[in-house]
Image (tube, rainbow, N blue to C red; front, top):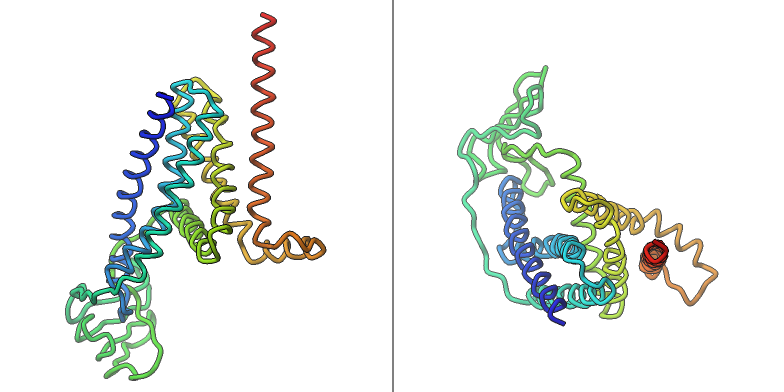
Length: 308
């Protein structure tokens, strides 16, 4: 019981630190993207914080599980009770924060005005590289529909007194370096899609949310055997990170519209299984196979030790 209490405390602290830190970083990233976009859409700090928290919930869930599984392996905790404790804690935190964020959406937001970046004559372009079309706002980002000059490579400068009052138009973002490697962008996209999926399941009801979250957490906990593959904890954590990244990619792939159509075509003759249950069932099946494999490996090791 003392070890389970230490594990619960370790997981809780890890989850809280990751959730608060990633919420803050994601909030800053969303605010910068909002400030860079012209004309700015109506936005409030509360809406941005909620969006950042949904994104951070996925990071905190995966990150705290990975760190806690490594903690279990390194301290040689008894695996089955420890995994059960992690499963309950992860479900509790995931459900509790989802409820809090859902209730927070009903709080009346207050308008938040942000001073636009730059001034009159700011040059907007889709890229910081040369040879790109640029738009120069003569009155600055404060009046994005005002007079502007369009610079197209190989063509004369084009002056416009103002944009049409009711026309839909877009402007390049305010120049602010954001050249990130593709693997980081793809990771951020998969995290956002995973958080959106959890949020959609929660909107459908408590039971769809619990089924989907439970299947996902069960699959993540089953990957504990990867953290015991070598004698180097850091290498094991890296392998565990790759495995968790694979689960994120797999989740995005299974929840894509094309795969949902494939599942629907297979399950059309099975009336008692809905399409929404396909992904949780796949996660549970994979987790069960991994658990069976882990148990068989454990039994084989025990027999080899007894023979020696």
